[in-house]
Image (cartoon, rainbow, N blue to C red; front, side):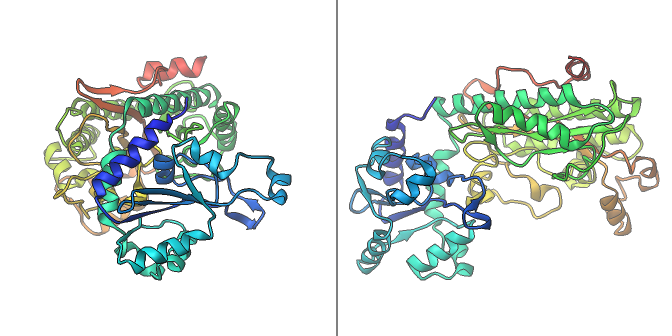
Length: 464
């Protein structure tokens, strides 16, 4: 399934209406060398360029000149030297026609167009760059030094984009659901593979093969580890041993570049130990507590607090915390065991539009992002609205270095039983993640294939 041409036309038309005036500059991504120019990383187009122009090719830029009512794509047609290596492609004008653009020009004409606009006193709106080549390009086009670019990026432009991309239509939701289903297949492959004696790299290979076999890519680097207390552990260096917990965080990006994002935790042995099962059950309770808060108009922060409260309650059951679990959640004491945010928006980016700023994407106007440990990692906190697609991913982690730091600093001694943490230092960590869309009827779980969640479902998946 592809995004229809009319969808791109409508998106650009609304953007022009919302901005009202000025020139909007879009910088597409280019090929980037890994260790020399011709040995490149996998090309991935800029997501904003994809959303408004749908052109999945390197070496492009575009402008929407609101004042002149022009939409122009700048790029170069292939030379015979290019064709020898890449094969024949449609011409630039043919590519543009597929997304409703009738004005295409050589890439070398971009700078002159920008200079003419500046000479007329036209406002040039650009987005905060996240790539080094874009920083240099903006410097060349606008004379803005790289260090000054984030502060001079257009907040109005950012907000106008967020106001569209945060709300998924049915076309986008179907594409995301395809990615979620493929991501679930990746996780099911892991459940069938995980066992004592193999290595993390072997599980990662099986998982990533599923995406590759379907002609798709990864939405983000795979996390496949028995050291789940390291939240982003990409090393693949450990052997799986009986009694370990294996954590997988992996998702697919389909050909249209919409992402799925799932995580799973499972025993390396056939079953969890009694202690592991207890912690897993606490985690499931926290997950359900969060899901119960997914209501229209309810800030997602409340779902985060609900999960944190249940985790604090569970840690109190284990003798690791004390006091009121709800108070422990509100004060931030819970973050010793749950130091990350509950979830984030999903779309063309696995953390949707994170390059534009979490404050604009995940927080409503006037809603401040916390700087406190734990809360500062909450990427989504705003009230939930129809069309939002997001993840729910509570986790429970035992991080020895964090335990030592907080104990030395006497943090949250009214809530944390530091004298009881010793036997838990090597527990590692676990989490599960599912993707939801908010509808007028409430939150809907995305995906037509069920990912195991309960202990019984986990054991059944491992036995297949």
